[in-house]
Image (cartoon, rainbow, N blue to C red; front, side, top):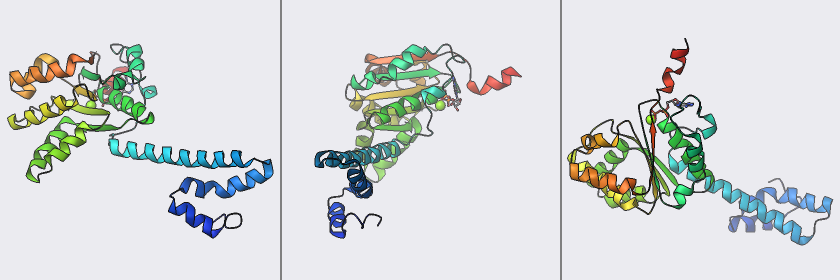
Length: 250
Ligand code: ADP
Ligand code: MG
């Protein structure tokens, strides 16, 4: 304990009981400061409460980042728009204002592998987290597997909820594999459940007219696309893979 000199053991105990760890940590510093600078009781109290609020905001943010399961942490500032001119920088920066989350709109990135779809999705996810929104990142494959498995241990409803709850759900890599018939319904349930309730970002290497190859069933495919694109920003990336960047320079 660092501040037994100024505060008392009893005070520490009470702060702990009230779970005011932010105050507990800065109390000694603030006591010295209030003496040195002649702070009023009101100013002193306000400083302490601010310390506690900062601590809580910090904790919440860490918790949100952890729960989001982002595969990496990249920002929009790491994205080289000059390399990918088919991506409209202004449109992406507009999206980064996160109005789309307020309006429960979706974003669909379509482009070849390596064109930055995951990078842009994650970067928007990071912005959302910094604003205090809940985010969940998953590949479509992971989500489908997870839902399928959950039927076996009867946690299906609970898993569905986990995908419906976040303010922003990022579904990466739609279309790398076709889905089994039984799993398309699960996917449909998530999309229907989030419709006008939460934002979803989807990345895909396939254009819409090929999605029936992913979902196999034409009726379900159009039902899924209908719900997704009703309030949606479609972003087609037509450039080449960033992974070829250095290769072409040589
Ligand atoms: P995709 O999801 O479309 O397959 P990624 O987003 O995974 O592509 O991009 C592949 C790699 O290249 C990642 O490391 C990503 O950060 C990087 N990358 C892609 N496009 C850009 C870009 N325009 N500027 C900077 N890095 C990029
Ligand atoms: Mg990707």
